[in-house]
Length: 137
Image (cartoon, rainbow, N blue to C red):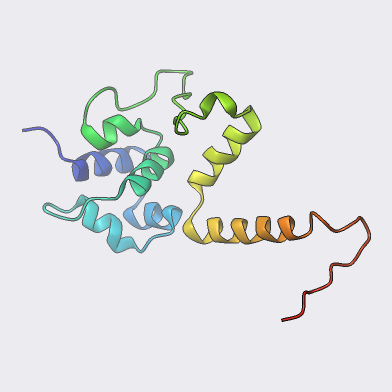
């Protein structure tokens, strides 16, 4: 019988010397989520969480999700970058780096970053040195 997804998560987590609590902290989740994923008959992580788990534990997503292929990246090769809906060829290296970094953020960090970016977008029409006026409500 092949190992299930919970067994693969446990194997990779233990190989990375992380506790369930630490993995959950890095994901921005309650520790019970990781406990459930590794439990016999427990819940399965969604694709976003599974992708982030693979990145944190430095294992290949395909292996973690399906058990197929190699568990780890080939030595010196970690560039199995995700495809961005056919737009990959349109992204420069900075944009790819931003997307890959964003995927590793916790939900709270993502929200804070999006709020920061929204604030920067509001300021784009403000001349240097000019104070932005709040619009009347």
